Image (cartoon, rainbow, N blue to C red; front, side, top):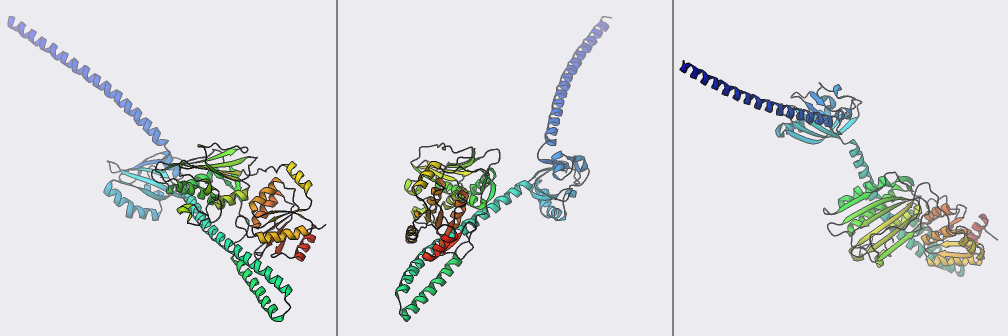
Length: 551
């Protein structure tokens, strides 16, 4: 009986111990199950967030099974090909989005590499539901079940941008070459025209004093040779048609030009471009504007010889002229053009280069002058900037300090804004001093002196300039001072046609006479009369009578 009781107690103790172990295991399993449940819920939430992120991502994402049939696609991928919903493509083969040429490319190049590496990326061209081309940047990844994960981005806008930038680069290069050739031809023809003018004048005087048949016949041969020489020079002269002025958005053009010039930067150098959010328009020849900015950027980049230098470009919209804020105290400066009193666009280019001394800045805008290679080279330099300033009525200022850098500040009138004229008091004061004033412009002092004599003999007050830019500045200050403008045509800094166009913008009723040997090409509508060099007294009188400018 005692043995049975002991055995029963032992069995009971064992059952109690087994129950405790079972309860402990059950509690442990319950805890593990609860933890797994929390982890599963977290994973579900994570998957849900990832799913939302994928569905709303800007990039197109899709998956196919091992047969190439779509099993998943986000909205961006479907809309890239013109479909409103991803469901429209689920269950279809990815091949439905490509034409035969693209599928041949996949078969011959893409899929062999994909099968070998389990991954492929590159550019392909698909076709949307309406038949238009879809330019893709595509990444393919092999899935464990043999399917394909596809990630793609539409690069159509990028291609358009790249094409526009390439076209812009090509136009700038072609314009620079053409400008260099035109300027060279213009300079050569101008100098030879002056030589021919002197020969013509001397031969004319000899003809009046020569009564012998043989010398007279030789002089006629000289005149015939002069006419032929002038004909050849006129054929060489560039076309003086006015620039193709258009409305340009500088907030678009300047960043694109920065992209063109960025490859010139050293790998350790950086450029930053800041533009206003709102468009900012100027009226200018787009090619001339592009050449001007390219020349400024190129000069700035070539001046930065130290790694780590920074090129900063900024476009500002201003309601009127305010002095620029400079990052250093300039040791040298050059200012060309006039302050703008109305709304304007300001473009600032700041380089951390070697800087330029005043002796270099004084000639920075001159034609066929270059500071590279110790001044031994001849180039077109920044003359395009000068042309842009003159054709738009803008202003350029260059500030520099040795070892610190340079700042180019280009101010251009905003499109549609008229500019105030010069001080009326100054115009009234000068007009009271002189009556019947003529403004003469010619870079040849001999020709200028001859015109002065002709007009002074008729009682005209004479104001003379060898620089068309200075003459234009004078007219802007006192637009009512002169009653007639007589200008040469072939001048190194600004042609007579260009000067006439600018003058008519300031003084639309001012008569303009083009006095030149280069009258063979088309004459601008801004010109009221032409006078061949050397000017004769009778021809000048006839022009003055026709223009109602005689006393």
